[in-house]
Image (cartoon, rainbow, N blue to C red; front, side):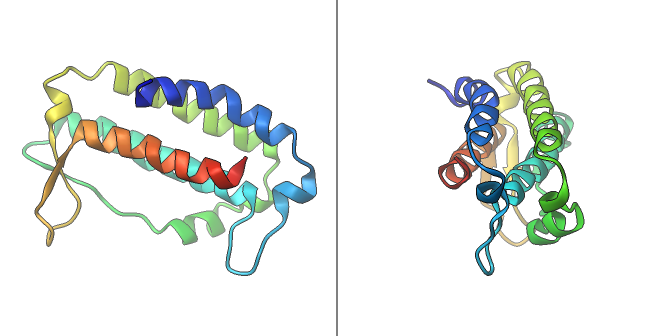
Length: 146
């Protein structure tokens, strides 16, 4: 099963899996760790940033330079711990459905678009690699989330 097929399955599985947990399980935090709601919020931030990357990389002139984001600050500022779970799930699902729309329409030759992660490290990846890495990152967090 390829990464986009797995992402499609997760869009349906994650709400069911989180819906089986109690409010205490979803909101409890260990010192220095995110709650499950905050992990879901982080995945929302990841989806927002990667949707922009998947879109912009397609028309980049030369290699596309990935802009980093401050994941801890985004989780804090977006107040994910205090947002209703249903609202977070709808947002997460919607963003990932749009990621599927965008990524499934990328022409084969565009998947080879070079991606660069910093001005200092000039080792290049491809847009296809970035898409697969997005799903791998999601899967890493799903181990804790569900």
